[in-house]
Length: 133
Image (cartoon, rainbow, N blue to C red):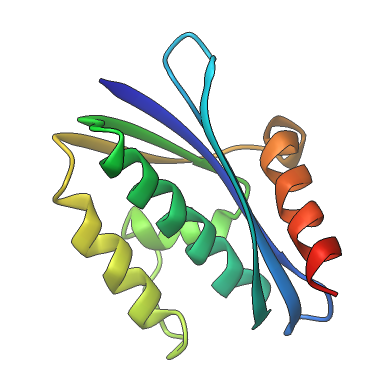
């Protein structure tokens, strides 16, 4: 089974109150799960990683074998595609968690998408931040 993960994380203040939003769909674009969680105080990049982790964990629990991860964070995508090194000590453990989860899937890819193409995940992240105030 193939799952497409649209994930987004944000923080108000950077660092500040942070939330994650994830929309998981099948290949036809039909929603199979949504995640909207307040995660406490974090940076935007930490929230982006935590959103992706939540999406990967959910995809794994749904039995996905192939996963396409779509994020509007160019930094996170380039780090996961080994185009950038992870220099931030707070992001390194999150990168490692994602890297370890990758082995759960037969095929995985990380794609950067424009923010306009990630509106649902952004909405879920903002709703989480609103609830967490």
